[in-house]
Image (cartoon, rainbow, N blue to C red; front, side, top):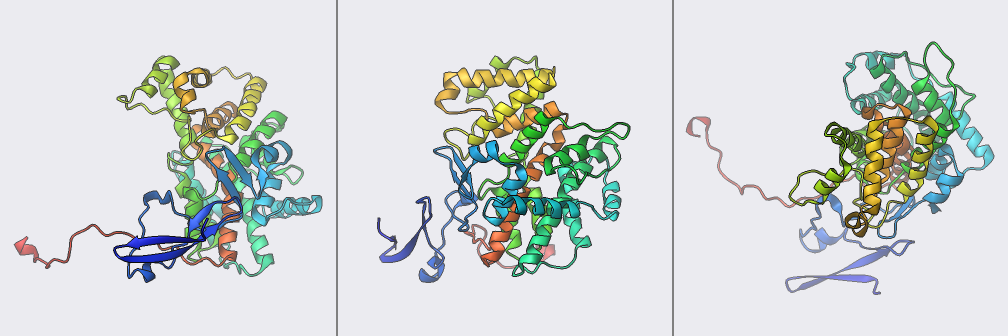
Length: 428
């Protein structure tokens, strides 16, 4: 293959270099296009064919169903690592040694107390406020309690900012849920691991000692690992583009949370449960709704099946399906919603229409089932997604700043009115 791409516009031919990634991805470097062609740009709504950056964090091949963090296969990480190990690898590039991991956890726990005035901000929200809006606001508010900007050229300052948000974010997640449920706001314990503390802070009751369930710890650990990063998706691109203006880490993360909130992104697992609820209310006939999903004239949309990126299968779904089965067996949950989910799953895995189109249950489908079984309210599902995605966002923000990437500034093709005279209001 040539190292040059040629573009012909009219009688003029322009040459642009090709960029090749370590996994043989090829991109046309068009950063000189506008200058060389006297104003011509490309247009790519949704940036489906546009690489916004070069990144060494996550590799994703949707055709082959491959997902790797820093070169490590997601299947191996989910089986052999815990969430904090994966977070360290994503952020700093390598899996930690035992000493590095212990120090990382210790430093995070030192930062896992939130300024008490944050409770006042939380108190100002009504109980019916959506948890994602609350979490985004609280994350942004941390900037007020940590006003100094991070010197990205200082490894120490960068590290301190990272352990600070890794320590405080789970507290904000837990408080967001407990506020909605009217429970007292609490803290974790330095004796517990990262994921164990998340569960303790979320579910501990004021009148009894909280006991960890290893099946739930394992399931949540896997869920957080599987959601930790996913290349240049909507929320990650948001974190990078906000950070490209040299906005701080907390402000950039807050923007990412808002982007994740949408039902086409992080809100998909909430949409799955809302769909299951609607099917249950209509009698729970899964065959009927699978028929509606196959009918092109029917507006019904089957949530939690297939994936816009993965054209074969979602590698994360295979892993989390096992955890979902373990959680349901461990808790012995009798829930008609989950019965509907299992019915849809079996229909999809055995129906030629879905099998031929590779519309398998995805990670959003199974994560919603697990969260429902664990007793996490449906509005909190996207918050849990944000907790998992936190190290990926941090890693992407850190990479973007260390690479000194320019401020994001997309172009447009203007399709509005041409120049026209102003008409005074009494003549309009």
